[in-house]
Image 1 (cartoon, rainbow, N blue to C red):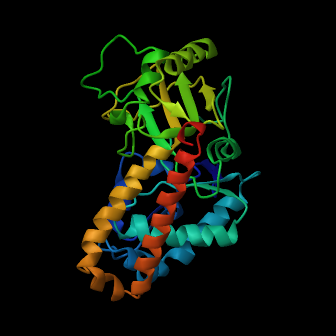
Image 2 (image 1 turned 45 degrees about the vertical axis):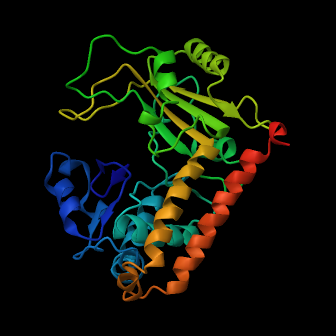
Length: 324
C-alpha cells in the first residue's frame, strides 16, 4: 500500500491504550516499515479492566482509530474485510476490542470481520488452492452462532532445536490434531467436527495432502457430524513460511494452519463459565467494573449468552444419527 510520500507500507494499524508496547514498534528494528499515523496509543492503560477499555479510556481513542481505519480502507480498491488480532485478556484486548468491533459493524456492516488467530495464506503469492475471506465463512460456519474456529499450527519448532530433516506433509497434518499444537485448550477427539480447513504453505503438493487426509480418515481418531461426513477444505500456497530474522522459530520448508469448527471447543466455554461462577458468587472485583460505568446486569446477560452458546454446541453434537 502506498501512503503519503509514495512509500509502500503494510496495510495495518497498531492500537494500544498505553504507549509502552507500541513504542517498541516505533523505536524497534521495524520502525521504518510503518507510517507514524498507523501506530496509535493512548496515555493510560486499561488496568486489566474490561469496563475501562470499553466505556472510559477506550472511548477517548476510538474516534481516532475509526478515522485511521476509514482513511486506510478508502485506499483499498476492493476491501474484503478486516483481520483483528487481539488478546481476550486485559482491558484493551477485551474491552476496547469489543468497542472497536461494534463500531466496525456499524460502519462496515457487510464486510467480513475475522478476529480469531490465523496464519493466512496470502493471495499475493502463487498457489494451487488459495483461499479468500468469504470462503472461510462459507466453509467453516454452518450456523450463525457456531462461529468460533479452533486454530492449530504445525510444526512449531524453535530455532535452537531445529534439525536438518524436514517433517513430511502427513506428519505436520497429524500434528494439527494433537492438543499440544492448538491455540485453545480442548480435546478434539472428544467432540465432533463440522468443518475443517487445512491451509498449507511451502513445498506441498495436492497428492501428499490427499494422502494425509486419507490417513486421518482411516485412523478414525476424529469424528464428523453425520450431515457433513467429508468436511475437509484445503488451501495450498507455495510461498514458504516466513520467520522473523533472529526470532525464536526455525525456518521451515512447509507448515500448516488448521481452522476447525468442532464441538470440543465448548470445553473452553464450560471452563470459563465455571471460573466466572466461582468469582461472581463472591462478587469478586465487580466494584472495579461498576465504578467505570458498567452495569451489574451486563454480567448476568453475558453469563446467560455463554450458557446459551454452550447449549448450541451441545445440540449440534447431539444432532447425529448415532445419538438417537
